[in-house]
Length: 307
Image 1 (tube, helix red, strand yellow):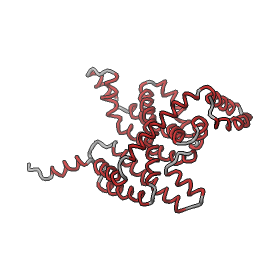
Image 2: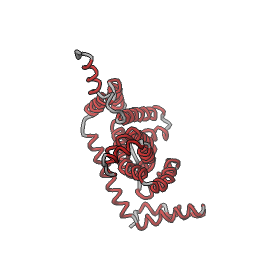
Image 3: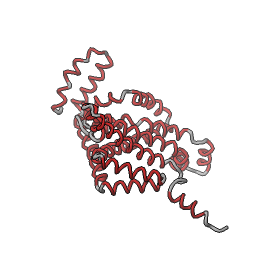
Image 4: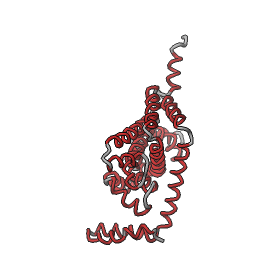
């Protein structure tokens, strides 16, 4: 059964049928989905919403000060002391500006969309690297997903899932998934042939060859894709405030609507702080441990060892 809000789109769909054969076919497909697949969209809506709500509840569980200290501790462990200080001061600046709740909402949407993008994108990248015909099918789809204007994704998301967090996450998922698919494919294809032959010579099965030879060798490239997916998800979540995504995007959008430069600048500063924190922490996963606090402490202790 169609939701009541879907009927508002039907006249507009009929009005654009004269745009051309491609537009007519797309409109017919959307109308068919709205008519026959609404139960599937309801299930997807419930699942995605439950994931987003759970992530937000976890993020809101600690107090703002505790959350800032946890992030600073992660930064000290994975990146550096300077970054830990930046994270601590930056998050407290967000709190002082009164934007803590919107920042947590934005972070929850980014993590939910990134998790779903990685859940779908990593297996696609692996399959495309091992099966050339899968890559031939995926490549034009990825080209379309990467070059289509970001605002276009908002239209079908709203039509199929109404407004709110779920269509924002779905649109962000589609927009942010291509990098992890492409870079997973690239990383696995660039594994040296000698390593592959050595793995086969030691009796590795295809699954063992994937997890014990190819993935460790391709991990830096794969993690670059993960980093890019997270960054694209953050940029799209801000745009998705136009369809009720909420969070810091709403703050920026209100600043635009009210021509309030100060409000828009505060929202932008909060987005930048969140982006830097996510970028540096995700980039640290590409390192092999040479910059972790354990590695730094080992180097410090080695200076005092006697020969």
